[in-house]
Amino acid sequence: MVEQRKMNVTADNETRRGNYSNLVLISHRKEEFVLDFLFLDPQAQSPQEGQAMLTSRVILHPGHMKRLYQAIGENIQRYEKNFGTIVLPANLT
Image (cartoon, rainbow, N blue to C red; front, top):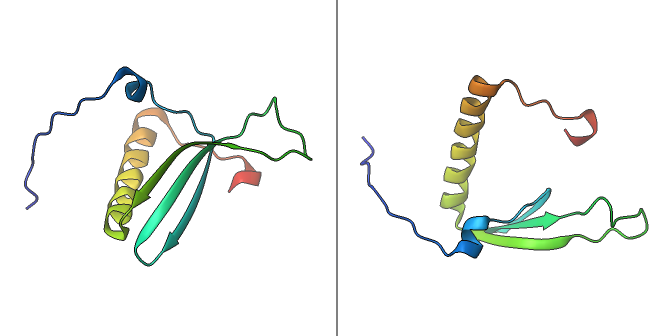
């Protein structure tokens, strides 16, 4: 059985605001996974200028990455149960 722990989390206003990302690049090596969250501005982009802004980088141990993967799957299932299936455009699958 997993022990339930309570944790108080605090953050300054800038961190609480969060960062918007519409693209994520994931890379890895034996010791870690690196998630680069990017913002690709559709109004500032042209086919010749494929530049994205890095908004946040998260580096995770492989064990933490696997737990995140499982938690994301569980949350998507709950979301779809409450709000319906998330449909991806054909070119993004």
